[in-house]
Length: 169
Image 1 (cartoon, one colour):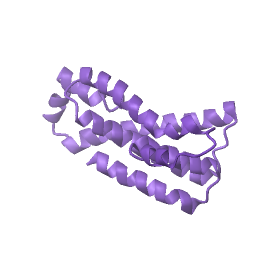
Image 2 (cartoon, rainbow, N blue to C red):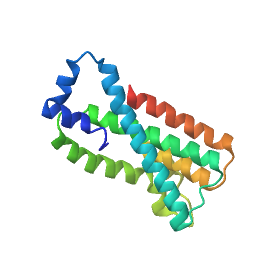
Image 3 (cartoon, rainbow, N blue to C red):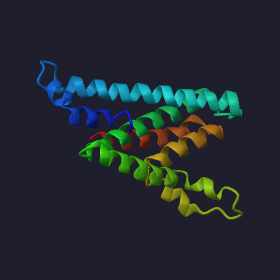
């Protein structure tokens, strides 16, 4: 969200409308911004997965399912951030929305973590976590960590792609 917020900053400063008056197509300008978001997220997720492995000894499971889960996370995070920015008028709104919305949706996405030690699992929490994109990403990462077979992670990755497409549209 912070990377895609640069669109709002440039609009406020007047540089984005000036860019749109150049011979460069609008799709190229916005495409470049979306690529920047994706590359930033790829770097962040890759670093965090590697850091978690090397420093904390987190076993992410087999390489390919972990990469698939990480890629789903990148797609969801990028498109959700762009979607939120598309609803905003200025960066002041962004601070409030990113602080509040991201915190609430993030907590809902990992709500199952708060009850991991419970003797009776609450399956309603599984459904609640899937109401937000973070829940889909967490489900994929959890399955990868539990060494789930590729075919079990694939539907969750497909769901991440579908949600990403909806956010992007």
